[in-house]
Image 1 (cartoon, rainbow, N blue to C red):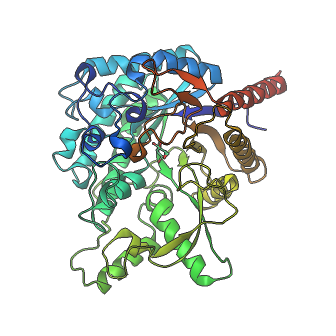
Image 2: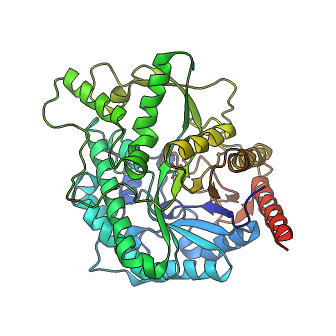
Length: 475
Ligand code: BGC
């Protein structure tokens, strides 16, 4: 049912699995700082040790091989490579670690997809103002260049930034992710999103002009989006609210990169109208792209989509407060859950596999029919844990069926699927209470042993069937 060269993957992120937070000269990241502050993370947990993949990489590799993955998505810890965030000081031990990981993957016939930034800014850069500062884009570009130069002979699939939406909103508006800021609601998140888009675009142009010809890789940014539809498709207000919500989430990052080089008009006009209403003086809270900087439009070689859930939408400020300065108030929507959608794990994740197919079709139609990698998708268990996790096995089967339909019936160019996640790991503010792994990790055992869940074993079977079918067809 899947194309012959379909990428079968699973993903992880450095802070969620590596541990070794101070090992061998690694610098601190904003997640190290955040977790070490009381009251930030469920049960005061942290990624200090996590799955200890910094030392136990070989165990991860075994899991990857058992699953029969063709691709593995990992992220680099910026502060492990550049402890102060900038290039004069390179931590060679960090370089060695990632060289080992990349070389081992390639030796096993597994293609690495490498994310440069998955939420973990070096603390030294946060101390200088972090993503709110325009200068961060140039600093990121230097880091990206360092990574292309160091690993790009072997890495051919790059993600610059993972989920700028989450970094901007959860980190700088809601304050529930590092760096935990919420004092400038309705302002800081737009600034952060803007600088992340500029950083991404600069890195793409650097790759394009200096490395592409020689290294021949492809690069994008990973955009998260729920599938959104009007609560009542016949109600114009619900339809408009859905468009607005899409503009403030998916459109915020995809529109500039894939369609116009600028933010969706719906987003800008909603923000500006609200600023006026509140008597907010000055320039728009949503920054503008400068013509003197590298263009944003066209800076993705494929669409990298992280999809987890769906929502129905109607108007209403969704808890933001009528007169408050906040993103929630700007976008003015209320999310509604369809009662038929199960929520078996973490509370925000209603399981809706068919939403993925609809979203893929929407992406094809809206963003000029790009090649798509589903760079994250999965659902979690929250205790009591079941190694025989039948429901999650069914979820993967149903989801992959929807992906196959998107390819065959809707003609979406889906190039690959990365289950989230290879391992149970540190699930950000939820700590270890929420488990997304295809492999169970026993965090109570000093060896941190990994055991395949039933969903992992069945995913492996699906991959193996698909591979043997395409081999059969080609012979
Ligand atoms: C992130 C992952 C996270 C997952 C599940 C995504 O937002 O990229 O790091 O573990 O969702 O919450």
